[in-house]
Image (cartoon, rainbow, N blue to C red):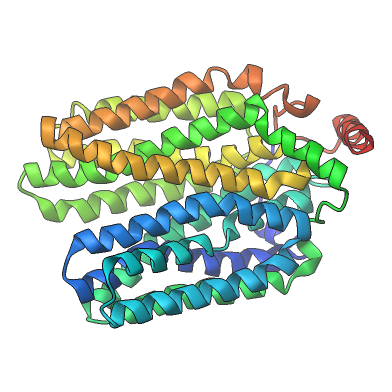
Length: 426
């Protein structure tokens, strides 16, 4: 089957107009958490205060994201984004003011929580726009679109932290924080200025209530569990790699190792999105989870930073396909009127796993060394694989329609439309 083409995908009407602003905003979001750490540390001199504020930001973001997404699904992106972005800008201004005024840690944590609670879910909104744009006439290109989203996300989290850290190292942590907020707000406003590609809000309260119940389906719970486990893998991996290179007397190797992992992920995500895969999406999920588990188990055997660098090529390469498969499976599992909420819940699950894993992996490293931390990553990857075994059964029956191969606009499209009409009628 011919390869999909990213260029032709972005030439779809309105695609580039929403994808590029969302990518700019995503860069700002990727800079925010670390920017807060550098900002607080530069004025308090302690990482404990910085961690407290950053933790409050992360918890508030995870809790508020689905609620903000619910408003987006109910009233539309164009109506919800501007006030949310205004609140985010004001919250960031308040936090910077509190930090520069040497406010108590409790007030700083409150400021961090306000920043997190107002953070717009631009990735979820961009993914929802791809679904609305392609699901009817070009459904076979949805995996490519979500792969492009994963690549954009990976670039943001590779470049963003480097930029904000460089500014902090140069003595300008406030500039880094302001730049993060500016990119988020500008990208979000440009996204809101493109109403034509935004999904239609749920206008029928009865339909909305019925759609809300689709978030409790076994398929959604499975996807949340997978994202939770992947978040645990991410959080434990960061701590464990740092501990490993310190144990081996090569702390400077951490940055190249993370860079190798990121680059292999970018390449794998690019290649994954270029192909139309014959295997069904649940089967691809199982294969990618199994590859991640194999790589995580190999982490327990490495004996040098060079060996670790070779293994992270494998683990890094499995992440973008997983991040592309999750929205593909979510789009075919939940009702379209709660799609932004579903994407946000998955993101919150991943964030919760990452936050909790950092503490658990830290304890494991202190008790057992770096391999103790890698054991946490192996457990998380194994949990993903075990959950993925249920994918072909649970996910293929969600919403009464198959999640198999990338859906082609053929006879199956008519049956899918019939299911949707019946759901709307009910």
